[in-house]
Image (cartoon, rainbow, N blue to C red; front, side):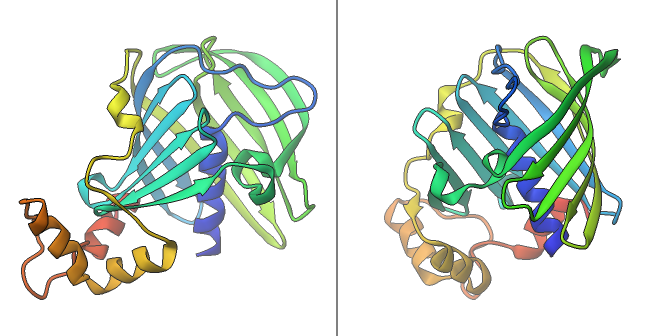
Length: 239
């Protein structure tokens, strides 16, 4: 679970441009969507669908039964959507997470390569966590528009080491629907405890909300969970 948490933190870090004292990477200059595959040497594979527009990102994991993360840099907030609920987390210095937790100490251009039909610049990057608890190093392949097509990293947190690779495929440079970066109508705001409770126990409240909206969620018959945890995990990790 610790490796999974750290892999997730690194994934979010690359959705948000990393803060660098010397020369920060350019903001992505185009709208795009793509399929993302992240793998670790421990055998974990996490597949997702990602979308980007100016100052906004969306990552869908596990399909309709999984979890969606929406990052709104314009509002300095991140939303986690699951089932018909969402959590809201501020993006600020006090809860330094993802990219804000790291400081790049080395960044070197290696050369030019074509990856999945996209021309990229390969760079070597070494970064450390600001609290000294971990670091990572490896290679990034980035297009002239600022899209990171591929990553190959080795990270360390305490005495734990983890190799991680990530790659974008099926990349489409096209205008994205603004609705992708908003909370859908009818979603209820909850904290982590409430969301996990409903995910594990099924929750009658979710069913009642669906009835009040005149809609019935598939797979929520009497006695069944509102969110199929096994199905969600299979969608997240391809197992």
